[in-house]
Length: 214
Image (cartoon, rainbow, N blue to C red):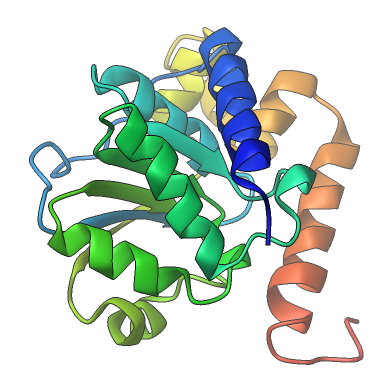
């Protein structure tokens, strides 16, 4: 459980950080323009750009919103009751739009989301495929969600991001380098290896309680 002051400070600092960030290559997802009665859920493989897409949607909305990334260590201990304190902060500023990143870290988050959705709030959330599988969401949100899966960059996005022409050389580079944005930014093989390890250890072995990751 956190104090209202702590939650308000985290919301303000994350908003300030968001406003300063380079949101990178604009990603396009069809069919999310007029969602109001359903939660929009952005899923996808780890490190494919979900958080950035969430920030892009937030920034392009043109209306006040609450954005909260639950991987922030200052939110350790955040529980269901803290959502009520968060809602009081939103009400104080006349905000009816929520963006939640990595919300699966909070137990029973779906209770808050369902309740506020019925009150007319617009809610967009993100999470990895390992924790946001469609069959589980169907149980948690009972048909009140629209899921959109994000992938690493397509070839066209790769060309736009790396400023290369569409030819055989760039096609071969794309096949070799792939479309994970962070790797393309840094060129460090360690970035890809860490992503691979995180998928094996955090998304697969923990989920299925596998002792032998090999």
